[in-house]
Amino acid sequence: MNCEEQFSRIYQRAPEAVSFCPYRICPIGAHSDHNLGKITGLAIDKGIHIAYSPKQNGVVEMSSLQFPKRAQWHIGSVPSIKQGDWADYLRGATWALSKQCRLQVGICGVIEGSLPIGGLSSSAAVIISFLNALCRVNGIQLNQQQLIDIAYDAELNYVGVSVGKLDQSCEVLSRKNHLLYLDTKDGSYQLIPQNPAMKPYKIAIFYSGLEHSLVGSKFNMRVDELRAGVYALQAVAGLEYGKFSETMARNVPREVYERYKGQIPVQWARRCEHWYTEFERVEKGAEAWRRGDIEEFGRLSFESGWSSIHNWESGAPEQIRLYEIMTRTEGIYGGRFSGAGFKGCCMALIDPAFEESIKRNVTNEYLKSFPEMKGKYDVFICESADGVTL
Image (tube, rainbow, N blue to C red; front, side, top):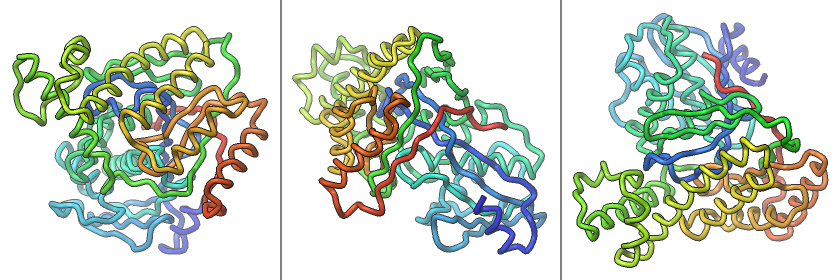
């Protein structure tokens, strides 16, 4: 791997180990986990590798093959506020882990992502891969839920992105050829095996050529708009309500939304419409997967993508165009934006028999619309995979 070669060039020795965390896709359940919704997810066989060795002096020294400049800090004195660069996710991970465990040993390492940054939860994968390495050099053993919670704390409370636990859960809990069906309200989940009657599938990633970033996007704004809508629904319905930051769509029945949605601002109602209908799609999708009905599962994923465009109002023009092309391409069961839908990529579940024609047709149609993306746009075919190994 390139990260191992780069580590050897920098430090003149081989790394002690390589940590890996897979990326994930969420076919149905987007824009839901931050308000305690349900999600579906699959880890894929691409992700984040970190070649690393311990540093006994407690210094953390990290480089990335994707970003310039080496980042450095001490495990005992992580900056109290984010620094505004790529390493904030790692600082946040150090900060969050140090609240739970005593850290004595630092780490030097090189990070490599096997796909472009673009909506596959690379931020969570970086955090989890780094946490795994930092725990190993410090002799710390975390269970799955602890790893999920610490990674979530880092991204929410240090980096400042209003995430839920979708990404971390998919990357930790997933198993190959099983659909993760997770309730983020209480963390309960099922790993639904691929039904023997299910038609074969692969996972296609269509990278738009636009780099993805939640920090500075409208991601946090959309979450606030949903929360505002739910807060207003409680008020007009005469329900008790507390702090705005603690308001969750999961705690307000859909019947309340349907009855009072005309009394709240239209934009807020659209965000609520997406959340409540997505909740229903996830439940239907889990049952379709259980039956082995990948066509129905794919249809629901396409429906989720439509709602993301029209109700959640996310997606750059490039992503929306990719989605439109996908909906009329033979051999694609279904798909949507991957991640929050602010730049980045689209994912699709495809029939492997159509793999080459799908790659050719989607590429040709997309580059007709956005010729400037030639050389940046790309297609990757992946398989489902196990979550991170602790």
